[in-house]
Image 1 (cartoon, rainbow, N blue to C red):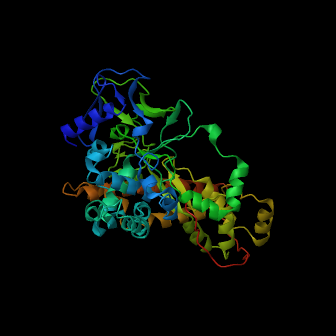
Image 2 (cartoon, rainbow, N blue to C red; image 1 turned 135 degrees about the vertical axis):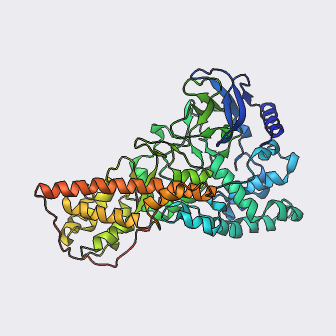
Length: 493
């Protein structure tokens, strides 16, 4: 972003009602981070860095496009589902040029991304074994472009002028706008509660969420009976999950702050009429002002933002302390079937109905996920035990025994085998100074995940050996089939 672009953005921001403490906050380019915010003087904790009026947030609520189209027609065309509506609003605002109230802001947004969404097939192969490629959603996004966005654009030449379509409403621009939302949007609460923090939500849910989401107040959590109602109506639940949250917004200035694991020293808070970026600890002059993305693992940092964190780790390596490994429940099914004759479709369906996910997460603490243990125990129940469990309407307790540890080990070994190269091979490759940036980033992601798998496997093996040494033995048993066909877990949250 050129200096004159930054100056134009700041002038527009203040002319639109925003306020910036220019004596405390500046914007500059940081090596390896790109442009970010810098403290121009010592900043105390609790200092308001800038205030953003809600009416300059760019969203489907503030853009006039949905009203021009007609709100009934907007919903009929399913523009309220996913991000397609917000993407179209951003395309249309860009097409208005200087007539758009957000023209200066849109000019300040990135024109290129290093995220895997824009990688070629050769580079994407380097991410094999990780969950990144599966989560790109490129096919689904392009289907929305063809089935929802283009028909809307072509049906209203009075709004989307035909000569602007090849410039502002192309698939390339669609992906660009989508990447801007993924990397820079906030999920801003629309109620009028004061002093609620606008920060990131749990990073495990990474399929659709905006870059920086609101931490909802505890009292706003849905009651148990409402959750049960959703579970009783899966079609309604699926529809609600697909709908675009009305609060997903592009937030000028706030999105210029960078983030790094454990480095945040400022957060966004919302009030009735404005949002405030506030320092959460003292910041020395010359230091970068960091927001938070929720301490995401490198796989998510790469998918959303096109970079990875390389920080000192306790073992002396460099990496991301927040790295995780996702393990599909299917691997537990396959591993159980190696030793037990059990048909699992009914059990998997019941597991999902009970709120179990089809993916468990392995973290750097090297603890065996309790959900994985519970799932394995469910799959290995005898026919009578299975019937009793259904009657109690509770999943098995995550009790770890020797035979469960054997299955866990098999699951982790299968997960590790999904990568096309070994950990040692990857470490050797990473020493090559001629690597492309994409390949280097993919290696960093793979290495971080493989280390978690390797180290957890070592811990599991220790537990297995300790169990055998204490006379626990390795019990295997034949399980009576409960009927139905073998099935795959089919619900991803």
